[in-house]
Image 1 (cartoon, rainbow, N blue to C red):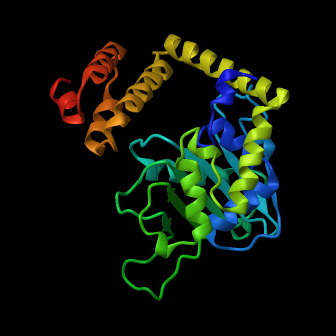
Image 2 (tube, rainbow, N blue to C red):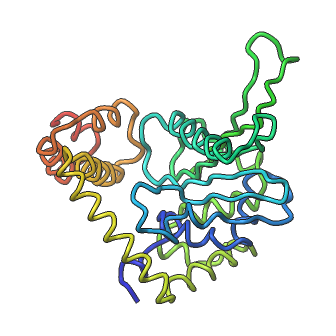
Length: 287
């Protein structure tokens, strides 16, 4: 078994996409996330990085539709990044443009959901679930009815009394580290997902796909260096962010500073500072 694959939890993008490519797993997740009943879902595997790692630029984690033709894009987010709301807007627009390109009339556009599964609190309000729909500022009687919904799930929520118990159990499972994720969460759906994770880790086919994806990412980083080193710079910033996460959630102002930096040598210097820093304040004072 590939050592890297063995150490993955479901919060890894590859593992999450692999688990949710199983229709029962995806259906169970959507029912818990949205508090609805779904008869069945179909996974669009051509958009899934697990199935086509050779497609450069493809980053959809999970893309599915149900029996009512409602579309779902589910994205795993481990690290907090700036402009998450605008990223959700981009994903939703991509879904609509594809449907229109296939000859769909505006009136025929199906309902769509973009769901970000975040291993951090994206809005700092302690909610397990943040749901956004269009509303009119001038009157509550007017409704746009455009069929769009954007949802952010937060594994670090604090309002368990306001959301279904089974959703909280799953979010705690997602947040868990490798050892904790293998314990019994007293939830049948989580047990089902744990079995899928174990099966994926023991699959030679999935191991080969994971290795292909790793090679693809390395190629993209090399290509990025040739084209201004953008991908290499992004990878360095994400690594720095991961090191700093040991101090807790990073403030938006610091994240903006990190992602605005365009000199990879500066990022390397910050990395050395972060490794020696005793606290977040200590790091910021020495930047």
